[in-house]
Length: 212
Ligand code: AP5
Image (cartoon, rainbow, N blue to C red):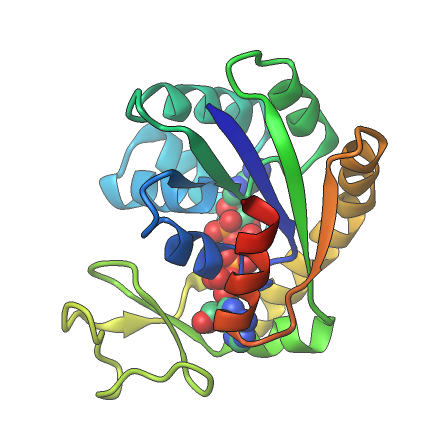
C-alpha cells in the first residue's frame, strides 16, 4: 500500500479531486475531515470533542488525529494499493508520525496551489448535501434545483466552518503550518506542486499524469 498525500489550503480542491479519482479502483480516498464529520453525525465521544475545534476553524489535537488515522487505515480493504490522503498531515508532528509507520510509505506529497481570494470564493459558496455529502458551489457548480442535491434529492447546507469569519481563521492556521510541511516533503524529494486554480477536469488530468 502506498500513500499519496494531498496538501493544500482549505478550498483548494483536494476533496473534489480525490472523490473523482476514486472512480478508478486502485485509489482509495481517505479524508480526515469526512471521518470527523461522520463521528459528529454519529454523536461519538470523538465527534463531540472534535466539533468544538472544527466549528471554530481550529485544528483537532495531533495526538487525537494520529491515533485516528492509524485506526482508520486498519479498516481499509486489504486489496487497497494507493490511498489519497486528504487533510492529513496538517502539522509537522503529524507528518513525522506518518513517516514512522512502515505500513504507510508516502510516495508523493502533492501541493494544490490556489490564490487566497479564490479560496474564500470557493469556500463561502460551497453547499454540501446533508444526506449523501455531495458538494456543490452556488456559482461554479450549482445544483439543478435550488438547495437540492442532484444525486439524492437531499437538502443542501453550508458547512458550519464555511462562514467567512471561520474560513479566514482556517486559512490563517493553514498558513502558519504549511511551510514546515512543504519543507518536510521537499527535503525528501517527494513534493510536487500543482497549479490548482484551473477547471476541475483539467486539474484532474494534470493529477493523473503525476499519479501514474
Ligand atoms: P477538512 O474537511 O479536511 O477541511 P479542509 O482541509 O479545510 O478542506 P476543505 O474540505 O474545506 O477543502 P478541499 O480542499 O477539500 O476543497 P473542496 O474540494 O471541498 O477539515 C475540516 C476540519 O477538520 C479542520 O478545520 C480541522 O478542524 C479538522 N481536521 C481535519 N483533519 C485534521 C488534521 N489532520 N489535524 C487536525 N484537525 C483536522 O472544494 C471546495 C469548494 O470549491 C467546493 O465548493 C468545490 O465545488 C469548489 N471547487 C473545487 N475545485 C474547484 C476548481 N478546480 N474550480 C472551481 N471550484 C472548485
